[in-house]
Image (cartoon, rainbow, N blue to C red; front, side, top):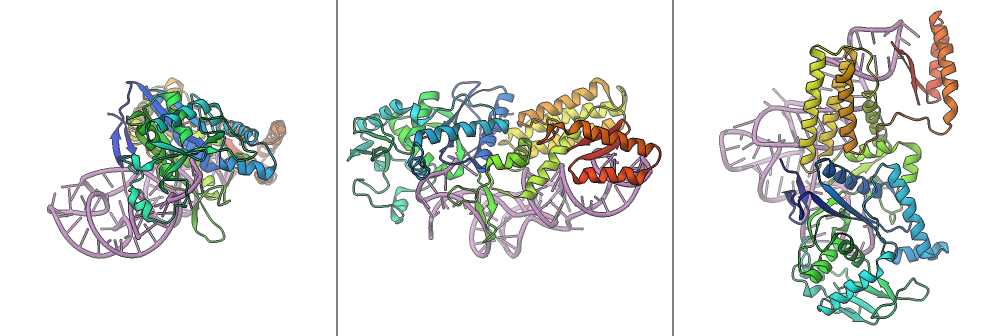
Length: 470
RNA sequence: GGCGACGUAGCAAAGUGGUAAUGCAGCGGUCUGCAAAACCGCCACUCGCGGGUUCGAUUCCCGCCGUCGCCUCCA
């Protein structure tokens, strides 16, 4: 069975084929670091991390490139507003974002190129387009000549005529057509600028991705990804630039994730999370409250292509899911290694293995894959209750850990947040409470448990003694 | 207005041309001193509405209603 992936370009599922057998070249649009990153950015990063992990699980070698657009209008605007150097600001924010991705257990990409490190390649790219007649210089700017690109609009399903019929385009006298877009922008005073054949300036918005893609992955790639808000104009323009220069198809698969949304408390309308709307939950804020696995579960629980509405209930639900997954990894309590329960568990493992692959092969159906894991969780817990232990039990847990790992879930035991030193005190209270229980002082024992619960420490009395977690 | 996506139980959310996964919540039971956790059982005669194709549609087609995204910076 081959993997099926939804391709925005064809608007249908297609079997995965790669340019080079066994290798996937994947370019994913990263962020423009001009302000704190929010969980919408995290969603995109997690989605493509899961794609990458699953492709590797299926035996592909994945070259995964994620860019930072560290010079553009927004960065400059923001830097001016806070009185910072633009490049210093974006560099700092980009590094911060990388740290947060690590906290979310996103595997490091093969490379994280930045515009400021790609200027010569961008300049050559623009020069090439000018030479081929696809671009023209005007007063220090360089524009892409959209009318020269015959299939412009093929990704977003728009025709140039329709687009021009709208009145949304600003009329710029320097442009031949209102739909033309800037490849290179002439420097204004006090802006970062680089020398070029057209005078000092900096790259326009879309060109950097084309140039970085070619630089790091070549003229043709297998998968190009990003949020679906980038389909137009960003990805449309990337296609136009790249294919006009090389004369070859740019990316085989265009993969887009849906937007993370929030309910606006004022209007009660659902809306996209974005910096410009000011309705963002930052990654830092989320991670203050929840484990990175909780976020990953939120993302995995629905189709990556669908919009995902975030609220605190969603977070709470997924925290419970995480706890359930963790309980399955708790040790065996018995030692049975033979019998129907043992066989049933082995069967459940095989079923899970197969179901997982079937789900993920179908356009990365992570919600379906997760359902398979929960079936395995139940089988493991059930086996533990029946006294199953030994190698078969350990193997089942190992398989669960492995498949969850393919989704990027750590399933690490819960660590006390904040003060790490509460352990001995909790242990002390537990042993005192258990003394009380021995002499049937239940009222006092229950009081200790209740008070601890209020303080965020949960006690569970089991046959093996009392367990606690925060 | 144009392009696109979506509308499945209280909530979240998979899925298939032949009568609906999974998680949370809820209900009953086992276990427990009592809880919690775990386990067992129950919980959508039904998949926005109206037509059509079909032996049969939630799944395909058409229309309508509703929600969202893009068309301007945006993961």
